[in-house]
Length: 241
Image (cartoon, rainbow, N blue to C red; front, top):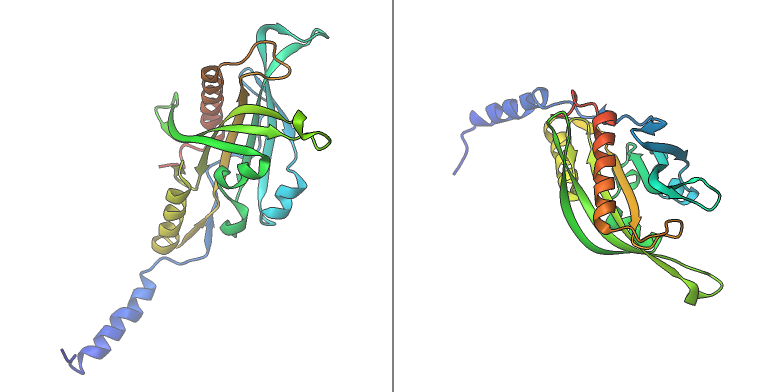
C-alpha cells in the first residue's frame, strides 16, 4: 500500500516527538541493600573479611564487597582449649558497578572454580517478620579441598549455598529473571541500577572442628534463619516493591 505524501511528515513528527516521552537513560539507581555489615546479628558474630585478589581481578573496578565469616556458638559444645565450638556461615555481598557483565554473576558460574560440584538447585521461600517473603536459590554441593602434595589426601565436604539478588526496588532469585528485569528497566524506565548479589554458605556432615556430624536439615535451618534476619536488617523495605 502506498503511503500518501501528506502522511510522511506526520509519521516523522510522531516518531521524533516520542523521544521526549521515552525515559531518559543513564541514571543510576542504587540497590536497596545496606552494604555496611553489623558486628553481630542476633547470636551470630560477623568477622569481616576481604575479597581475594582473584575476585578483585575478575570483577569490575567499581564492584563493592561486604564479606564476613559468621560464627555462632553451638550450645554445650567446646573445643579442647575450652572455647565454644562454633557454627560457620560464609557471607558474601557483591554490589555491581556500571558494567554488569563483569561485576556481578551467579554462583553456578564461580562455584566450580572453587572446587564445588553442584548436585541440585531448588528455590526456598524465607518468610520475614514484616510480612514479606523472599525467595532464594538453594544450591547443594560437594567441595573438594585439594592437597597439592598428595592428592589422595584431598578432603571433600558437603555444603549448602543460598543466594539472591537485590536491585533498586525488587528482589530476584534467578539470574535470568534478574537480567530480564534489568533490561526492561533500562528500556522502559531509563534506569541503570546497581544489583547486589547476596550469598551465604555452610558445610554440613562431618566438619573438622565439630565432633558430631551436622545434619543437612540443621544447616538449612541455620542458613534460613540467618538470611531471614539479614534480609530484615540490611534491605530497605520502603524502597522495595
